[in-house]
Amino acid sequence: MQHTTIPQLIDAAAAQYGDQSFLEEGATKISFADFATQAKQVAAALIAKGIKHGDCIGVWAPNISEWVIAALGAQYAGAVLVTLNTRYKGNEAAYILRASHSKLLFSIGDFLDTDYPSMLEGEDLPELNDIVVFRQSDNAPALAQRTRTAWEQFLEQGTTISAADIAERMASVNGDDVSDILFTSGTTGNPKGVMTGHEQNLRTFTHFSDIVGLSCGDRYLVINPFFHSFGYKAGILACLLKGVTLLPHAVFDTTEILQRISADKISVMPGPPTLFQSLLAHPELDQYDISTLKRATTGAAVIPVEMIEQMKSRLGFDVVITAYGLTESCGLVTACRAEDSAETIATTSGRAIPDIELRCVDGNNQPVATGEAGEIVFRGFNVMKGYFENADATTETMDDEGWLHTGDVGILDEQGNLKITDRLKDMFITGGFNCYPAEIEKILAGNEDITMSAVIGVPDERMGEVAKAFVVLKPGVSMTDKELNSWCREHMANYKVPRKIQFVDALPLNASGKVLKTELRTLANN
Image 1 (cartoon, rainbow, N blue to C red):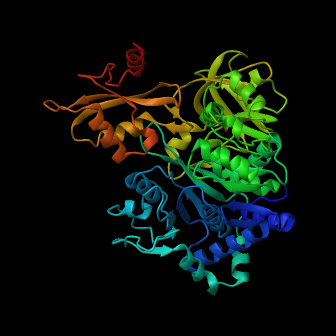
Image 2: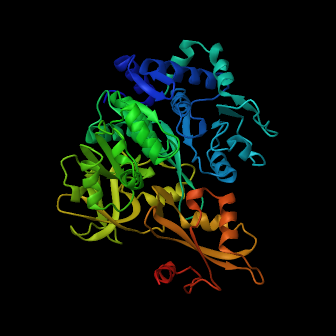
Image 3: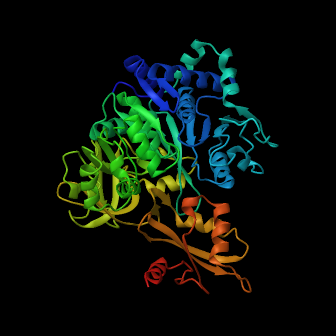
């Protein structure tokens, strides 16, 4: 791999793939060469607005072409990309913008009947100087607190910046610089910003692309959100690395996805298991031409062996890969290989990617025997640089020998395949999204009718797991499941909303006052 930074990769892809199609969305078709030009326009506009090397820039928008141009254009200018989940409410987005000291935010004017910039009204964001809005409608509401600049107007501001100035800024970026901060929630209830660098991300997803077998001319439908490492790194960066056409998809709809596979001749399509289960269950699956499908990657949930077999026999995939990673690993630690059996692909997350050490350890940080359960730890080039402005959390997660402790429990077999068995932390996964009980509990604590709550993940046939909340109300207060569910939908991202609610008189506590979630799990199963 000759490039060590994302700006170098953009220029190299433009030189190598030129007029080939890089980014397609509806009528928008952008070649690799055009994309480099547009990324430089974004960099110029940011320089004109006073954005410095190392400043944080937020992007809060769905999978659309402007997301890719803005995000990588910011990195071309040496800025650090901060991604925001499109399901966030205003308070959740504001926390991340504040915590990252973001100077500018790229957002969407209208998506699913929501004006995203308006959700930040009333939030304290002293360092945020501007919101640049994609696809702003003519009747967009004015913002009382801060400026709102249309995307086209923003790009015009860069015309005063010379090509030499852009080149100088691009050349100042080196492989060890932080390229992005992706926020991941933790047991404290507040999201932590994971810092990763240009070179380690490119190296990680070069390995990923090679394992999956991506090749020039592939057409890659990215349904996984760009704000997540799966969509951004395994999607956008992988396409740039291998000369692959990127086709963003903004809203999950099984029929629409089948239509796009057929119309856009999709060959690569990663996604959570729920995506492939939905396709296989579609009553009109046989009426669509899905013959172009070749490669898929999935993970983040337990997968039946039969589903892997059907992905090959009914959906026509030549290659199906399951993988394991976390934000702190640049998004990837292990992956199956194309030649693995359906059983290996379904029941394990494969072997460590090249140049990564992987272990399962006991409570004394000593490796356990093959076939025994232990905490999954790894070290190597893909280990994060640390949590942004959070040295204590970094020290807790990374030990003195460079091993990153994942908090997940797993078993390694004799071939080095990893099977995830449990989580040391309380995290659970809903439809591919990480859910952290402490974060949900913290938001529930903001309801003045609630004394305390505890949240666990419970099995769900469609989503894998969903949140169940055990809630203690204040004396004299009455509330229904429906009322609390409605309140939750106003105050937290949809995937965090408890699907099951149980009102209780008290929570089971240990001697130190800690909630005994093992007892809650037993209660939930009865």
